[in-house]
Amino acid sequence: MYASDNVTFTEGKNVYDLALGVGLGWKLATKKGFVLEANTSYGKLLFNANKTDHDQVLKLGLNIGYRFK
Image 1 (cartoon, rainbow, N blue to C red):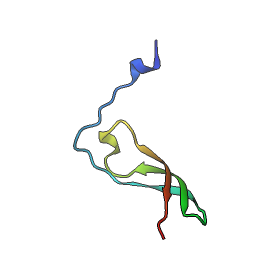
Image 2: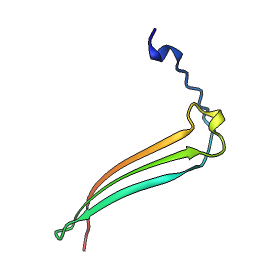
Image 3: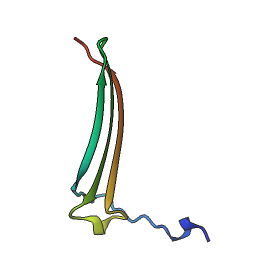
């Protein structure tokens, strides 16, 4: 038996929800204008978690850019 045998995804197309949680981030801007950002957030769904196959959300981000002066 594989773990995937017991997993079903039942999320509907029209399910909207709001998550409440915490986030952390880090930013580096050099004198030459290059910018590097990293962030992560974790939250729990508040209203329609019973209509989806999950009740938690995780957001990860990495941004690289240039700041024009």
